[in-house]
Image (tube, rainbow, N blue to C red; front, side):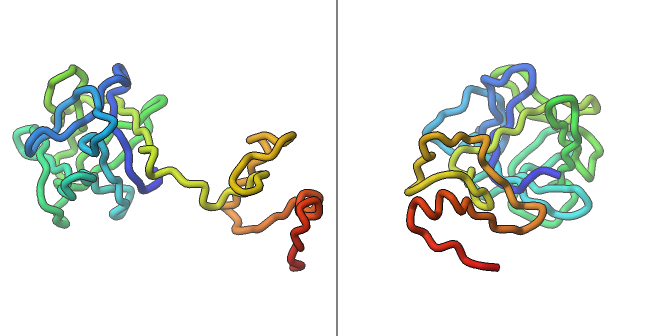
Length: 178
């Protein structure tokens, strides 16, 4: 499953393009780094399906019976449910109601649904990144000299806290006892 968060959607064959808002539809064009029109929030719904919501409008991607994809007010309708499926080094997005895939590849073209799955790159938007759950060798948010990013420990699967006792000692920090 994908991690919930804010993403940019780009066609695998042209990473310079991104899905952007254009009125009540979505088109492929170069993203504007100063705007949120290319940012979409993935929220897990149920059974592997997610909703895809525009960050700038709060409206959801909604598949229509004619193959178009529009932005609409959030509902519990299955036309707003999308299932990401791993495809090589990207994802396809299948709509729950229609069984069709999100497609689009050419600049200026509308994002639609079709029978053939398109491969999408989902890039987590910079403002949505965090180091929550990471322990890494820093002092005052600066990576310490002599240490590297390979010293990072991620503790998501098993909640744990680990301390570098040597470093804590050098900094005069008392290490709590378990």
